[in-house]
Length: 122
Image (cartoon, rainbow, N blue to C red):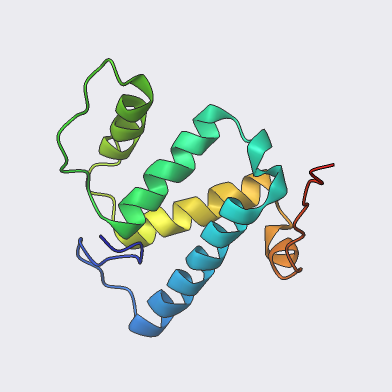
C-alpha cells in the first residue's frame, strides 16, 4: 500500500494545484514525523493527524474494525472511519490547516536541517 495521496474520491482540482498541494502535504508529513517536539503532541491530535493522513493517502476506511480489546487500534480505525468520503485533497488541506494551528512556523522550521541527538553509551 502506497503512502502517496490517492485519487480515490472524485476531484475537480486542477492537476498543477493538486501537485503543489501533495508536495506541501508530503513536506508537512515529513515535518511531523521528524520533528523532535512531536512527542509533546496530545493523543487526540495524533489521532487527528493519523486519520487525515490515512484519508489523504488511502481514501475512505473500508477495512474491518479491529477488536474492541485493541483499544488504540480501534480508536485509530474509528477516527479514520469518521471521515467517511472526505476527498483526498480536503483531507490534505485539513491536515495542513491543523498543523498550521498547532505550529504556525512549521514551514520555516521544515526548511532547517533536522538535528539528530545521539546519546552516548558511556
